[in-house]
Length: 503
Image 1 (cartoon, rainbow, N blue to C red):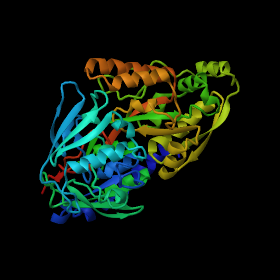
Image 2 (spheres, helix red, strand yellow; image 1 turned 90 degrees about the horizontal axis):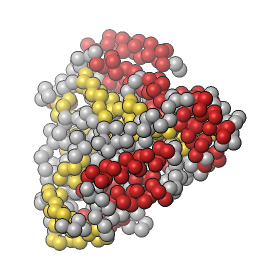
Image 3 (cartoon, helix red, strand yellow; image 1 turned 60 degrees about the vertical axis):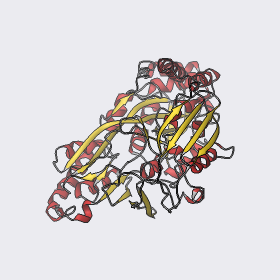
Image 4 (cartoon, helix red, strand yellow; image 1 turned 135 degrees about the vertical axis):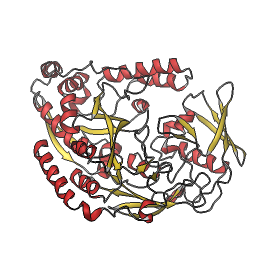
């Protein structure tokens, strides 16, 4: 379906919805409604254990709501206290001492203590760990319980990023009693406890009355899964949903901006959206081929056509709002003639055929059609294969059974993934690994920034992937809802400070 015809349909839908608004004026009129919140999400999480999965949808439900870590990432990207109220670092940088909050209970009534911290971190870094971000804990040599409210983390080398790493959703603290059942019955220490999961529909959470911190104003919340942009638009315009923090129909944003019932927030994310390439697969083994593909994709046309202008072009795997960003957008300008020249030089003057596996998000499905058209112009024929999210995680992320795919990497400052062996795009560079090893033991901020810029340069020159754009956070919510994050420095929908202004 063309964008113009889609827009016409949505305008008709908006007009139809407006006719029934009079019947919906009481949708949020009761005290019960104003103590609850219904949020829309594009993807349903595969499970709810933040320590055992790579899907951002997991954290979008449980991060800071159900599960908490020693530290947390705030809405401005800063590292803040959480289950640790404070911490000290030894002069040699080899020991972090964390002082824990008191009076903390897990949702099953079990008291939280330093033993749980040791269990969680030892479990995350264990040889058989299934943690999707196990490298976050690589510098830890030992976790020592000093007393019930104090824990020491010993390092093999200084780690300037430890407090930040411990703020990721993958580093949340879990109880030994419930760790094995957190996928379906998550038990954490957060302000909300898990209530119910209706597969394919929604997840419900409710306020935990014995929460150790400030009680949230919301009594309950639900996360509803709506992947279709038309359905997302209809649910918001009708009042069926209160908020859609990552809205999937950017072409309708202008309509919400003109409607006083809604607030629209256009913010930033950590989501580097890439055309990922399997660097060990067929022609994609050849750097010249990957460079040709980088020249063949019209990034601005992609942003305009698939995202309706919402997105920032990038030239590497790094967020443009970060002070260490290296602007490499000029390295591979859109140049089909140059792309054909590089393909011929690589031994593929007539191009080749490949598959493009696309997960459900709008940026992937819409963007994939445009990229396939771009690559067709230089002789590369892509067979588009739509896949569901669970299928993508299995076939692409775990088994690396793909040629091309499109995905947004929303984890904060995750350029280190390019140093991992057998990561899904199968990149292997000793030079890059050495940079990351040096970065991991560097504490000085200016030196860290310089190393990060060098790392960005290496992966861009190697054309590991085609770096498309930084995903914008397009959020829509009821104008009376306050406290939702406008930016996404990490995946999550922290509801601890959310409330209805007309309560």
